[in-house]
Length: 489
Image (cartoon, rainbow, N blue to C red; front, side):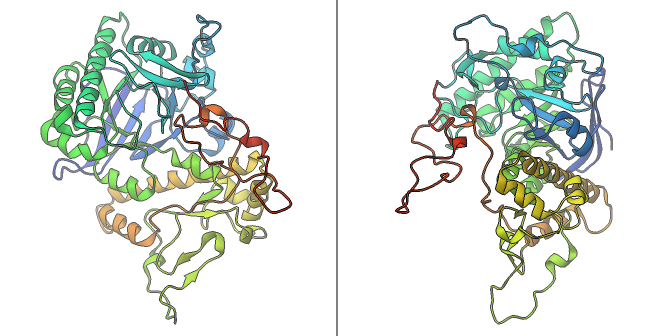
């Protein structure tokens, strides 16, 4: 089955559903998302999350050599600063010249390979909560010099200057784990609706056709509160070709969209819900999500964890355990210990048990890190806090996630046995529900990486030394001196 988005007359973006089935309105599907001049993205798939325009620990040349990601999520707040002494200074990214090799300012300034699809939003994920809050005319963004307001007009000007492939308009989000009450949720829907009207009105007034596709945000509140906003998307902006996709903050809303706004079903769906594990990813794929932004990859690499899951899971993972006098016997080394029934989602390479191991980071992995190095080398790099250790883990972890999605697509395309649903059930039975903690020393943290909430956060790394009496050290590692206090406005 093939379906094109409503803006098929534009050469900027094309989305095809290669295989899908409607079951209660939503179901897993296989597709292809393509932009002019970019590498086509087979879906379901994921995009890398960046920090200041770069995938952490990976240089642009290594993105080409060793990563299989076809897209990158970037945040405007990473490139701008709050006006201080020089109130009218133009952010350098707006003055970056384009070349034949990098045809957009965003690619040029970040040195991102031209084949990578760029997604631009106002805020990073997960976003740092703002003490300022949003207003009726703007949201609060967290720059490297503090919080500042950003209006739709300013953000649209940034999109026109940087020309990302996908732009996510402003949304009134709380960026909090606390569910907003009905009054706050209604305000979120009304503000977002007003900002979308302003967004598309500005696009209509433009004399040149837009080179950026708009993915409208779907808020993480109940459908009954935002139904008017979503109906406007389907009735006003979809027929005109201005709406190219949906940015979903709560995939559980997809069944409601399918029931009440079926015209939106052919659009590509980008999940910005930050799923914490592959179990959550599989559930969202079953709901019909096409593309994922996955911040947990960067966090796990920083923690010294090497991903070790695959889809479908190994056939031996569900074999009956050998007879044992203990009902909860364990196998594996301390760094990858698990029960007879469950496999670990990741291996903690900082554990001493890997100090002399010549095994690859994950059994059966064919990435550069696993074929050229072994666990003992990465363990040494983590102990010495060498950047190469985190770089190798990033290469490996991105390769594992790429292979995971390739397995998902193969299962969805398979008309025989096992089906995707069967493989997903086997995966849930084979692997532990959560990632291990990870005891490695984290990379140096800077002020803009810290949360703005008060209360004093614990240090990420242990103190460099302690007192002779065995009390807690009086001086922390130098890497924790920067940004130790909460960053405010």
